[in-house]
Image 1: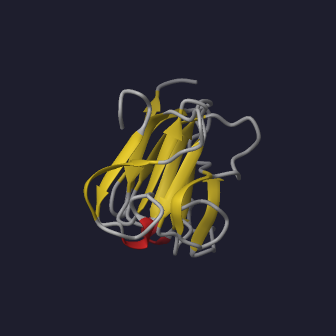
Image 2: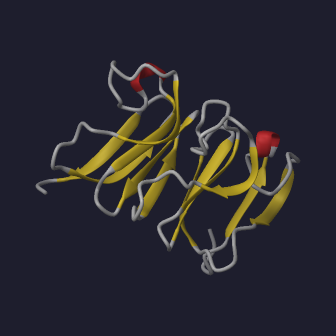
Length: 166
């Protein structure tokens, strides 16, 4: 990320991982194009997908989406950052984090949303969740009145950081 809210990427561009519009490898930083006026406040990259959160509280994802880790309701690859439009109305997202085949976001209300591949319990949706993947952001219900402040995603796990109290 840059001081001006811009986002830069480089490296292996396979499956659109860099968000630059193709799948080519980039050996030097290249600016990722977002809609005019959008400023990135946090960005994350998974194995072959990426996500960012903007000042407006919007989430964009790109790259590999075979398990729905892009959150767009399908499994199509996105070569450029694409807005996730399936969060509940008036939800402002403060941060995103990515794992190998999954993504998570924390809202201003302290809610945790997850999507992507759900095996190994990586999404925290419990044994009753029967789909192999969640293609859109799904609220994690295990926190009661406790607000999630931050989440870090790793290869197969998630570590939410919570605020004590309500």
